[in-house]
Amino acid sequence: MRIVIAEDLYLLREGLVRLLSAHGFEIAAAMASAPELLEALVEQRPDVGIVDVRLPPTHTDDGLRAALQARAQVPGLPVLILSQYVEQLYARELLADRAGGVGYLLKDRVFNDEAFAAAIRTVAAGGTVLDPEVVGKLMTRRAEPVARLTPREREVLALMAEGRSNVAIAQRLFITEKAVSKHAAGIFDKLDLAPSDDDNRRVLAVLAYLDS
Image (tube, rainbow, N blue to C red):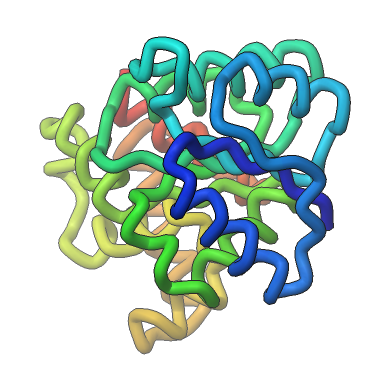
C-alpha cells in the first residue's frame, strides 16, 4: 500500500515514515508543504494521503485545501487528515462530497501505532474514520434531534461514525449484532434518515445531517 505523507515538522514526518514502513506500508513521498503535497497526490495517486491540516506556506489550512483540490482532480482519492485540534469546519468540508475514503484524527492518536495503521487501511478501502472527539463535536451541533436518541443509540451512533462495523460495535458494547441493527434502525428513524446497507454512505449521511 502506497502512502504520501505531508507534515512540516521534521521529527514527526520522519517518525511517520519509520512507523508506517515498519507496518509494511510503502512511502511514495514525504513532504513539508502544501504545493508539494498537491503535486504528489495528483501525480502519485497513492492509496492514502496522510495530511497535516496546517502546512506552509501560510500554516493555516493549506494542507486541507491541497487535499480537497487533489480529491477534486482525483475523485475518491483517500485522505487521512491529522490535526492538533478538533476543527469542525475542516471535518465538514472533508465529508462534504460524500465520496468516502476519508479520515480525521487528532495527532495524539498517531502514537497508538496499531490503531493508526488500522485507520489507514480503513480509509484506503474507502471507509470513514473519525476521532471520537471529532464525532462528539459534530453531534453537539444538532442537539435537538440527537436528544431523541437513547443513551445506547448515542453510543452506537458514535461508534458508527468512527467507521466501525455492526460486528465491531457489538463486540465493543458487549451486545449482539442483532441488537446493534435494531439500535441503528432506531437511530435512522429518529434522525429521519433512510437506512442503508452501505456503511460508509450511512456514516457520511449521519454526520452530514448532524453537522448541517
